[in-house]
Length: 383
Ligand code: GDP
Image 1 (cartoon, rainbow, N blue to C red):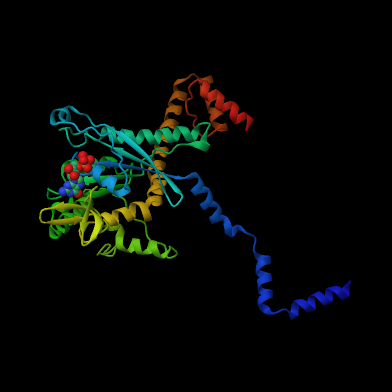
Image 2: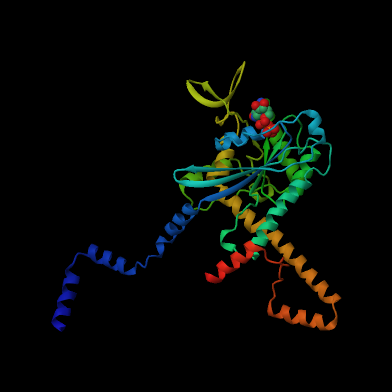
């Protein structure tokens, strides 16, 4: 027996060092390095979702830009209102959902449109919009505390593209008010609409002015995160383009990033330019190309929104905006419970106190279960 072991050891020693290290490596390999692949497979199978809100006066080019961004017609059934109808119209929230697929990756894209905003002379125009965002948070909060947490549909708004008209000298009071009403609830990305109306010098001037005002009024627009050194090369390149001249005072947190507000042009027509068919706007004096980086920031915006920062926008929504909403909710519920406790008689209050000791998380008031809920409870029991 000993002779056999000795022989094995001898063979091992005689084996070339390459084979030995390979064997050693194999021994050390447990297999958890495949975890990213497992997550990747599962996520691709499940598909992704993204909810984008667009806001700004009607006629600013919102639907044209959204269609240009996702190369799809999301506004097939849109009914345009006349002036009289627009005067009486209150802000509406309209959702368009489309399932898109690219290289086997499925994306459920929801566009939340806000027609009527900025059309009427009404100072509280944004109330239905903030209410909508809160309702989605509330729904998510309820679903999270409910029975069927596995299949929660996430309708939270991940990003709001805010269209600023190109004609003024900076932000209008309504722009400041709108962004301030929303900035704690959603990632705002300001855009200068119809940038083909301005010369490059005018665009630069307007951008500088808007950035100054965003700083001055303490508006929190979406901040691009710092790029990690281990990101892949494509991401690093996109990030570099976004942050070109980022913070001339070398303090990114103190200033709004150079590329915001993105100056954009939208078009759903394909025209011939420089011997190529491109998406653009044909004028008697020339062609404006949507995807030409020297004409506008459309490509930068699309890259940021879809290729490089979509996941971060979702993360910030979840970790910052939703978390704030949730904390507020829990605080209010706790306050409500303690108020109820105070009001009830001593015995009841003692009972409530005991219960609270057992369960420190406030219990959401539940309605009597309907047939669907009953079915779900049964299913869960069986599971
Ligand atoms: P919405 O009401 O904000 O959704 O605006 P639309 O997308 O319906 O666009 C209103 C009008 O503006 C249409 O005639 C568009 O062709 C035009 N339009 C859209 N985008 C641009 C743009 O970038 N530049 C210019 N000059 N016109 C645009």
